[in-house]
Figure: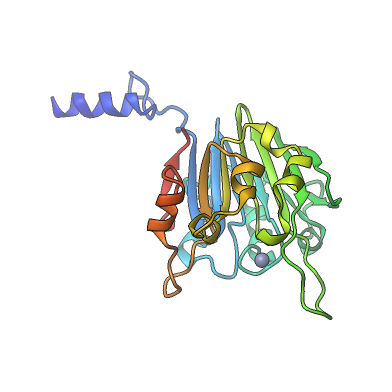
Amino acid sequence: MILKIMSLVLAAAGVFAADGLAKTNPNTVTFVGISGFLIEVDGKKVLIDGLTNFTSPEVERRLLAGEPPFDRLDLVMATHSHSDHFKAASVGRCLQNHPKASFVGPKDTADLLSGLPGRIFPVQAVEGQRTVLEVNGIRVQAMPLSHGTPPPGVPGIVNLGYLVTIGSVTFFHSGDIDASLLTPELLRNLGLPDEKIDFAFVPGFFLASPEPPRFLIDGIRPRVLIASHIPLAGQEPLDEAAIRRNFPTAVLFKSEMDSWTIK
Ligand SMILES: [Zn+2]
């Protein structure tokens, strides 16, 4: 009886067909560290900001080896070149090991990857515009979003926000953003509120702030917010109570490899 109940539960979860054969996994988001996520929709797999100087050795090993859930990656992306979002050597090795996968990132990240003809898609970002790419059946729309004004003499960095559509699912990853420069108007001019975004990855400290910035609600308008830029062990954790108060349905991952079923 227990076995029967278990198989009914698994069938209900879409994991196994009634005959016991494995079916396509449910659509999921898996946290891989800091702002890194694996997004799986309809069997397509996108890794974004997932290989960095801070990726845990075990997650990196599994990623490079293509162990589930990291088997058959279709697209590897980076929002910007900071070391907590992108590590060229690891991304290069990952692409070598995942021959189907392509890379999309700002030009300064793409320029660090070589020997992968036809698989590297550098984005030449244009302020206030979306750059549209179709890569391996995945629609990517990239838009520069300010990382902040650098101190005098320090060159600025290109940070790309991404709107990604796979089948009927659309998600957004902001990268690192300066909330004071990211107005709802800017995002409205980019057309984001009309996109019916299913879920959006946004730095968690914005979700926790006493007065959450308007761009979250009026500019992105996602169905579900997912906290990104999760502090490392030993760093001050996000204020979970504040996030829950501001956004009761927000997703806050606790540990690497935790996953959330896209609803
Ligand atoms: Zn950054």
